[in-house]
Amino acid sequence: MSVRLLVTSDIHIGRRPTKINIADASRWSAARMWETIIDRAITETVDAVALSGDIVDQDNRFFEATGPLERGILLLASKGIHTFAVSGNHDYDVLHRLADSIGSEHFHLLGRDGQWEEASLERDGKPVLHVQGWSFPGKRFTTSPLATYDLSITDDLPTLGLLHADLGATASHYAPVAVDELRRTHVHFWVLGHVHGPDLVEAGGGAPILYPGSPQAMHPKETGVHGPWLLEIDAPHAIRATQLPMSKVQYESVQIDLEGAVAEDEFEARVNQQVRSSLDDAAADNPELELLSIRLVFAGATSLCGELDQLSLALVDELRMSAGASSAQVESVKNNTQPDIDLEQWALRSDPTGQLAKLMLQLHSDDAVEQTDTLLHNAYQSIRGCYDAPAYGPISNDDRPVSDDVRGILLRQGMKLLHALRTQVTSP
Image (tube, rainbow, N blue to C red; front, side, top):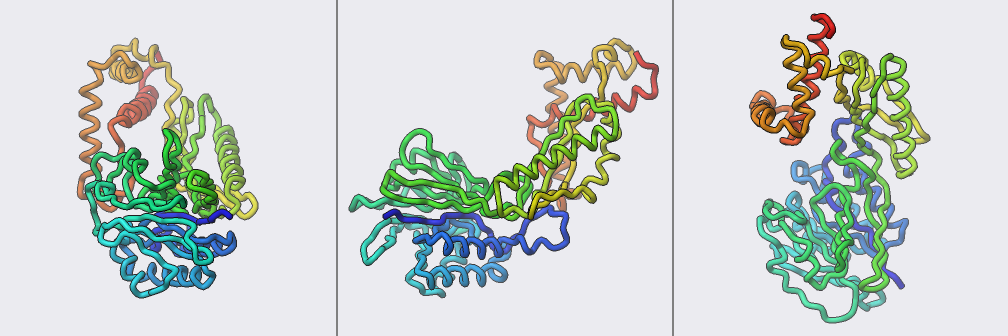
């Protein structure tokens, strides 16, 4: 008979989705998602729930978070469902205190004080699964926890590993580990925490490594389908992992190609078509979805380039679509389009518009390295200076451009400038 586990991580109880254009987003809070996970665990008749850290959010851990967490663990225990957990950098102190206060034989917090520990899941008095884990001893841990791994194998039962760690990082404040380190242990399947996006690493042989990700998406960067995972364990090397889409909110970045668009109704038609398609796809992938929050990115060369900022004003406030119980709204709009301009013709001019057109051609070219390197470097330093300025501290959560973004930023702004200048001069 197989062992069934519901596994998840990074719930961050105490938080709720951000950048939602709805006054009350509390119904999509992490605490509500935790309650939904408990219900699903009971419905799925799992043997245990496994939590790989950051279950409680650091900023809210003593108030909104601990009550729902304790109630959920005790409800699971009343149904005979065990909970195995390790703490992460956010809840390293809370889970320890919670384990002491609950005092339930069904709640197993592994690896206190950064010491590896093993517990067993039993059925009819006999062990059917071993769970090994390590918990954060503080807010930061800069070396690999695997350096002190000292657990041995004593039988042929499957072994699950729980760890909150930064996989593949060579230097990190959050327990950097390597794939090879994990696979040199006795664990048959690893469940990690810390990364909010789901990821299952099965390539290269050895034990699979799963980041379940946050079950509820909380930020526009956390795109795609979210939800806990169901593990069905038949033998040490026969473990099936299936994601259960359950996030009530989903964030997506949707690019709309406006190449060649010349009229407002054409712009509206392309936006409506792409948003509708994105909502239908998201609702089909996740039956639990209630809100799809979209970042629209306009691309392509179009004569509407200069008008898009004005045309887009109503999208955030007014565009709403529905598909059954799911709805879509626009969180923000980014205009990456370019004016429909023949750069080579404008580059023939000897006035400032011609100089600007030549610069745009150089930025487009992979060969004009010497001419553009200094410009790109200086622009990147200027952009970093803006983001680091104290005056912009309140909006520090905005995406910070990296060096690879600078060329695109300069091209878009240069083309918009050329579009404005050409209305003041005679066409070439």
